[in-house]
Structure formats: structure tokens, C-alpha cells
Amino acid sequence: MHLHRPVVLHWLLMVVAIAFAACSHAPQPTDTTARVDTFTDDYHRTVVVPSHPQRVVSLSPAVTEIIFALGAEEILVGRTDFCTYPPEASAIPSIGGISNLNIESILVQRPDLVISGSMVSRKATDQMEQMGVPMVCVIEKPRFDALFSNIAAIGCLVGCQAQADSLIATVDARLRTLADTAADSLSPRPSVYYVVGFGPAGNFTAGGNTFINDIIRLAGGRNIAAEVDGWSYSLEALMHEDPDYIIVRREDSAAFCQASPYRNLRAVRSGHVVGMVSGTMDLQVPRNIDAVRYLRHRLHPEP
Image (tube, rainbow, N blue to C red; front, side):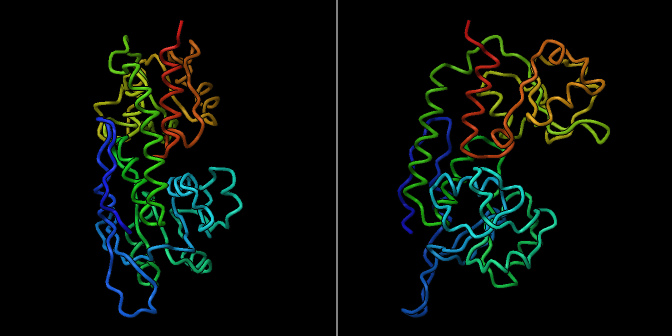
């Protein structure tokens, strides 16, 4: 893998050459040994991986979606129950859940590489390593622009560097188009609350140290939880802030609007609850650009 050419991105974006540098050639003992590389993953583990894997199991919906976006879906032989986008992913055998990872069901697929994400523990990663299967972790990260380094890393792993370059350039171009409308000068910025979880079990949202907060900002909104470090948010603070807009996964929208005391929020009463297609905003994937564009339209409708 030749990973030395950096990708030049918009001022908002991080240079993805760091991700490419994580992949490097490893020595080959004999001419009959399959060519391999080393990859340093997000657990800071250096893993020997095949340079062009042919049987990949994805343990992350974001990883699965990016592999499809790279046009490399033919190498996927396993995915989780939560890897449902694009719809064609349903044709790939499922190995089950993520938190209750079934290692035997992964091994049945005879993978030469397993790629995990944020929900797979270091313990499970170490267990796979003990089984002799290369497993690397590419996690979702706090900043929006980390999407580009993740695309670069996955492109490196599956031998699709040129496709990763192209995908990064395409998403970056779309982001530049949105930036040209001067998101930072959109005024006034409506206050926004993003619903991760609600109800008796607690209220959870995206704090300021999340890529979701960046999506809200790029769309011209003001996240009322921007000062929160993490995901927990108090019901009292939500009712006090009484935001202009509520953003929630589309499948949870009706339940949120009907539940007490959320139905008393100004955004609910005024019809300013924005139902988002699952995955466009809660996963770090190329569709995040669709989320920015859609939210920009909803938060700042043209006259």
C-alpha cells in the first residue's frame, strides 16, 4: 500500500495523511507468503493485516456503510444485526449483536480481517487476536472532520485508497458548497436539542465534544448542550432551555412528542420537531453531509 500522498481538504477538515500513515508494509518471510501490512488502530494496537483482504467481517454499522461507499462490498462476508444501510447489506450474513459479540459466529465466516467500531470492547478485540484473526478498531471520534480520517483508514485496510481519496473529495466538495452559504453567519441561530434517549431511564443528548454537535453547528443551529462533556442531560435543564427545535430519530419522533413532559416543550407545540433518518446523524458516515443539508433547510428555511 502506498500511503504517502496526502489528501488536501477544506480548512475545516483534518489532513488524513495521519490515517494513511497507520498502514505500512511488514516484512515477508518467503515469496509464498501472502503480502501483508501493519496497521495501527484506534486502540493503539499494531496489527498485521492482509494488504488486500478477501473476507472481511464488519462489527460496525459505520464501517459497513463506508465499505459500501467505497464499492468494496463484495469482500464483506459478515456484518452485525445493526448494519442495515445500505439496504443491500441485509444480504450479507449477520453474526448477531455487538455488545453481546458471538465470536464463534464470526469465525464461521473464515474472515481474513475483522474491523470493529466504537461499541466493541478492547477485551473482545483481544479475544479475537488470540484466535489468530486480525482485528482492528476504527472508532467514531468527537469531531466531524474525523469522518475523513476514518474513510482513509478503512480505504487503507480494504485496499481501496484511490476510492477513499475520491469519496473524501466528493464529501468535502459538498461541505464546501454548504460552507459557501456562511453557516457561521446565519443569524439568528435557533437553539437545538438532539434526542439520544428520553424517558424514565434518563435523558441523553450529544454534548459539545461530539461530531453531532458539529453537525448542528454546520447546519446553523446552537446546541443547548454544547457545554456538556458527554451524553447525559437533565430533564430540568431541557425544560428550562425550552429549545426552538428538537432533533430526534424519525422512528422515535411520535413517542417523544406524545410523552410527558416533553409534549409541553415549545418546539413540540410549534411543530419544530425534526425527525432524522436513522444513521444520517447518529453514525459518523458520509451521509452526515445529508444531515447538515437537511437541517440547514429546516433551521433556516428560505422565504
